[in-house]
Amino acid sequence: MGLACGFYQGSTSCCGCPETIAVRNILEVAGKKTVIVNATSCLEIVSSQYPRTSWGVNYIHGAFENASAIASGVSLALEDMGKKGNVIAMAGDGGTLDIGLQALSGSLERGDKICFVCLDNNAYMNTGIQRSSATPLGAWTTTSPHGRFSIGKEEWKKPIVEIVAAHRTHYIATASVGFIADLKEKVKKALEKKNQPSFIHVECPCPLGWKFDPSKTIEIAKIAVETGMWMLYEVHDGNFKITKNIHKRKPVEEYLRTQGRFSHLFKSGNKKVIKKIQDYIDNEWEKLLKLSGGNK
Image (cartoon, rainbow, N blue to C red; front, side, top):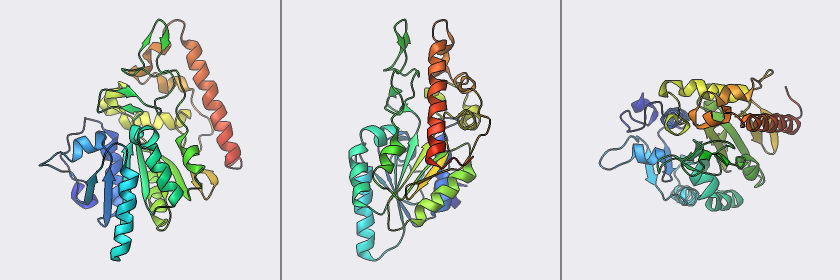
């Protein structure tokens, strides 16, 4: 499998890691004529430690904050040399929504010819499960602990797709390892934008940080979509389109129960937080329906 897609077997990723699943499928679409620029992240740690590598394509390890900037330079260099190929920057949620946001914004504003993929596992997992701005409200992390006076993280997830869309980015999509065909179709569309930047936001349920059995990764990814905790859609030249419509969404409680990071919400006094999350998701879904012209 790895030989065919450009990502080899034998990485040191955790059991049930969704990021290697995502990368294999992304590279199956991108092909061997691809340069990967990978910010410091879980993916970089498990796949590129000298003298071993899992990569069968050209690969550059960048710093936490500058994957977009490096990818921009690679794209310009290939163009100057008259060579063709895909340039894909990959980063986690920390390297996208937080530490790498400045470089990403600059790249999008310039219209650099790269595809940026955010592999979002909702926290800084490889450094000890610290909260990021992608961590959802109510979630436990080591820096947003729950207790007598705390519900876990107290802020909503940063709306990175809306931020990227505000840059007039030509193609943006959300994706999930629970829906591989949808992911691959969106990668194909993103890479067809050869002369324009594109952005794909992939949710990656982390067994270690989210506290669930590693065999449940795909199941939880699917439940996230079925409850509306993760919504699948794309933005093409400013036009929103839902790509996986759930006509009868399950209660968010079904998603929250699958993960130990939310277990404290089911204790006495915290049920109101679950209601708050449900109301928020309901509002976000209605907002997405309006943006997409009400396509159901």
